[in-house]
Every structure is written in C-alpha cells, then in structure tokens.
Image (cartoon, rainbow, N blue to C red; front, side, top):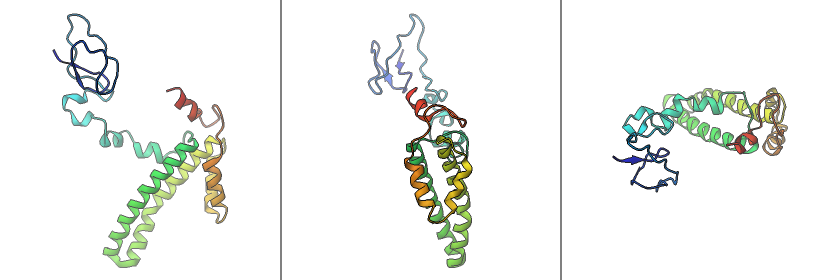
Length: 185
C-alpha cells in the first residue's frame, strides 16, 4: 500500500525515514495497519480532491484574513508586523482606488472618479487607524492616539515614531508580547 508524508502529502517509498520533498520525519506505520492514503495536513483531507478544504485563498477568506489583519483593534503589532501590514494595506488600497477611479471616469468623468475613489477610501482609512491602534497597543498606549495622524505636520514624525519605537517587552494590558509568541513557535 502507498505511503504519504503526513506534513505535505507527497507519496513516499516504503522504508523511507524522511520525506524527499519537505524533509519531515515519517512515522513508521503500525504493523498490520495500512496507512491512510489521504493524509491530514491540518485543513481536513485536502489530498482527497476536496477543493473546499485545501488551504489557499478561499480558506483564508473564510477564516477572516482581512478582518484578522486589518479590521480589528485587539492585540498588538510589533514593528515588523506593523510595517508589513501597513504595506499590504497600502498596496490593496492603491489597487482598489485605481479600479474605482477608472470606473468613476467612465461613469461621470473626473468628478465621478474623485467621488467614487473618495468614498471607496473610507474603509481603508478606518483600517489604517485600526492597524495603528494595534501598534500603539504594543507600545502600551491607547489606540485613540492613532487619531494624531489627522494633525498635519505632526503625523509624519508620529508615523516615524510608530515605525521605529521598541514595543513593550512581555505582556501588557493589551495582550501578550508578539515577539515572545514568535519565539515560542
């Protein structure tokens, strides 16, 4: 009977101790008991052809990827996570607003583009404040301070501060230290 790696699902030869694709150690099947030909990779039996259980874009959407990354003020973001999350949000915003502006030009000319892109930017502005609030939580400060971004000339140094200030070590009132969580994995 065929054997499969329980980590990645690659078919392996009998007697092999490590997966040739991912390097994961292979457990020896109990004598007399056949190994399941459909390994469980943590997302259900995705190797059996069930596309809905395969990890990927649809699975991430179902698990609330956007909400978990951009639409919550709970928890903390360390410096690197703040930078990458802000970068992702900025790229998503750019693409969506360009699409809305093009649609707006076709619907109502320049005025239509401005109105549609302006309305479309509101959720992204709110999401950026949520991301900033989570970064402020890492500094053990209230998320309401993210409203400082509304003050001209103060917002640039404030953004630089958020990007480079070292977060609170250990748990604080907003949750566990995200760097300790990374080190414990």
